[in-house]
Amino acid sequence: MKLTTRALVTCTVFGTLWGLSEMSLGSVLKSLNVPLSGAVLSAIGLLIALVGRVFVPKRGSTLYIGVVAMLLKLFSLGGVVLGPMVAIFAEALVAEAILSAFPAPGRLASIAAGGGGVLWVLIHPLITNPLLFGRTAFVAWLDLLDRGSRLLGLPANAALLIGSALSILHLVLGALVGWLAWDLGRQLQERMGKTSLQTEIPLPTQKGTSA
Image (cartoon, rainbow, N blue to C red; front, top):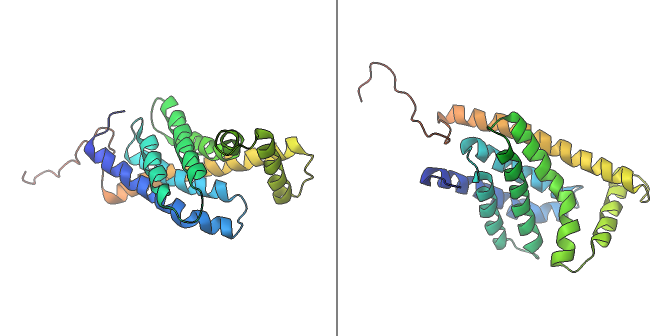
């Protein structure tokens, strides 16, 4: 990954926005017991990161944005932040891997990255709970089924149906975020009158104007 100073500054701005959204909304959504609060937070963060990718369409930029957001999460108040920090980094890493798999930036790449990043919210506790908190993946899976059962109004023993429904919900939410991020990023670029940082070509001057 080789980013110019201008690109690094731009990524830092978007990473700061993601981090601030986590710091301000994370505890609020959880205290209000908002359904799928983790997916909502992930969607907001990835929306910011994917808009940033439109401004800096270079490999590694999305991961850098996620690292900045993860470091800002250290300043959150009211509880353990290790799990959320790892989640932010992992979501950025998943999105970066998907974006880098495409030969060029585009709407489809953004949609796929959004879907994959938000879907990670479901997978995250199954991996991090055993590694970080001493809980087995089976217990994390039971917690997931319990939350899904209450959210969807399905019996807890309908594990396959609950898992499939939750996966689809997260994928659809992430895909919508990716779609929106691509349009929003391009619109912001047009309104700001700036070119992409892929090549950093200056805007053309009007004919007849002096240098």
